[in-house]
Image (cartoon, rainbow, N blue to C red; front, side):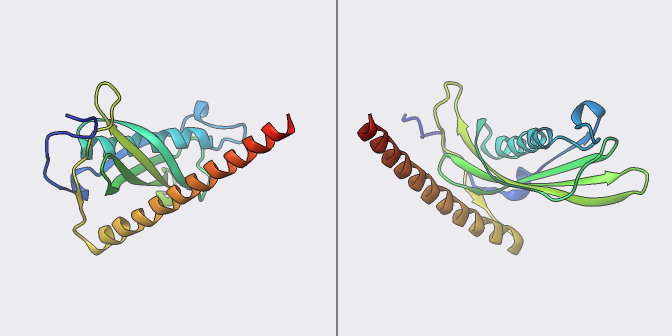
Length: 179
């Protein structure tokens, strides 16, 4: 069996892998202004994204990329975070997961959307070799739109990767010529 083969599995719906986690923002999570550190929020986003990828693939997953993140509103010490994730699309061994983050001010009971992100996870076996993941079957129109948009983001990531690779070759050649 090659590193990308696995036992065939049936396609899964988005609902089967959706994940949610909640966190209270504590002083050790914040900067001197009492706002949640961006890196700490990114950590929470990575965790809840991995939960959805793991549920979809039913194997180990590693974070390959955080494709995009928007910090929309500050989050303060004492606020409650709710993070929700779902697989947008499954490719052969990778999955794009979307994460949305809301904050609840416990005193006012106001909920605000504070961040969104797209992450790419790769399914691996115990030896770190890539393994195939089940297909994702979108059910609703919203899931279908996210499924199509995920392919566009993947194409953009691949073209950007190729552009950066070509730029590194040009830079290396220029460095070599200047030596």
